[in-house]
Image 1 (cartoon, rainbow, N blue to C red):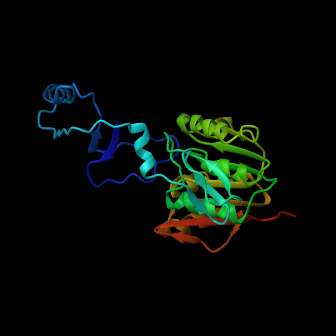
Image 2 (cartoon, rainbow, N blue to C red; image 1 turned 90 degrees about the horizontal axis):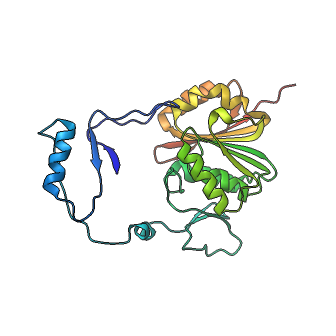
Image 3 (cartoon, one colour; image 1 turned 180 degrees about the horizontal axis):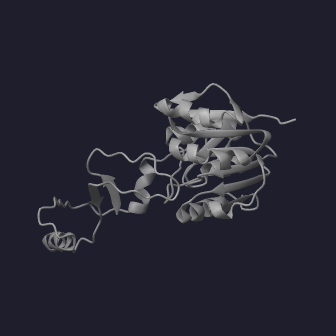
Length: 265
């Protein structure tokens, strides 16, 4: 079952712990072929106490849904060496650094511009031997890529227990469980680290400024995205007391911000 916005009410900026729902929601669900459509529609109207609700049905051809996604998800290269590959494909580059990743419950397979920018940055600046936090880890794709690129210790953090489960499972598949741990925010106990990555959204980034800045060592870096171009200056303004920022990297309507923490004498 999936939920979608049935009107024009984008919910782009929920704060941590918030789970807003649109005022008008479109629900799509799949039922067995022997389900009576008319009876189903009557049941939905009875449950919702709304006889005028719009309901439509269509028949789907029988197919192996677990295999359908393979048609559209293929091996992808980010930068020079880093590849994200589904289990059924291998990269053409024999020297590739490969993250084994299939679409799952949590966000993050590299197809979104914000994830792609983070992966390309990691490929350009491999975190060899560094301590890393991936805040808002989703599927764990950035955390696992950091492990594959030589990070010494990586922690994935997310408010969604399903994301924690997905990150741990993907870490197991990629053989990096000895380097990567995944925890909820309240369970994060690591001290200051060399690199913090946060692919979330502008408002949560602003709200988390004290916490994320405190996670970064003096001289360390923070990499943030999920930020629309018109929001970039607002985010930079909040973090400027701790970091000096490079020129933003832009793709489509999104921005990647990279800051280096001031060294305190």
